Image (cartoon, rainbow, N blue to C red; front, side, top):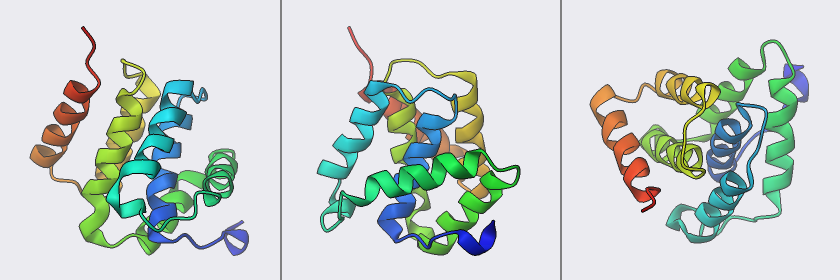
Amino acid sequence: MTAELPSFSPCDALVAVMVAVSASDETMRTSELVAIQRNVDHAPVFADYDESRIRAVSQTVISLFEDEDGLDALFGLVRDALPEKMYETAYALACDVAAADGRLYENEIEMLAEIRDQMSIARLHAAAIELSAQVRHRVL
């Protein structure tokens, strides 16, 4: 399958990480999709991003999830496209999507752990990013 994989732009890679967290529990909730769209609409890193790419990137992520080695392939694509200085940004965006519906599901927690591991996010930095997402999505 590797020969068929597209290449990602850096912004595609960020979108792919957000989609991966949303799709990790096999249910892409509306609140998560809204969070992805909100991030793309408002985060400065996406200022020049062609939003029409979201669908193709999402389909690539979903199809990779169906492949036995798909997760490794996904992270290979993400690491190839994303400068290392953007790894924490990717993790922050993923945490925002995971927190968007007000709770974390087991598969989302596992996917966040995989992202931390694959992107070598320092545990203290990860904890700060996670807390930031949690408090931003808190409701009264």
